[in-house]
Length: 51
Image (cartoon, rainbow, N blue to C red; front, top):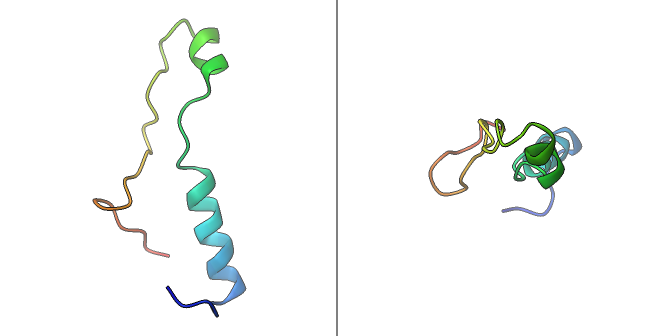
């Protein structure tokens, strides 16, 4: 991807990267394994961003 991109687009891409992490182990433990999967998890190959 191009290096020179608008700052707002960089922020949107950064938010997408941050929100694409797995559910933390302490959350799984605290909810007694009720919440183990991330409903908004995104694969870079399958789901494309509209950023």
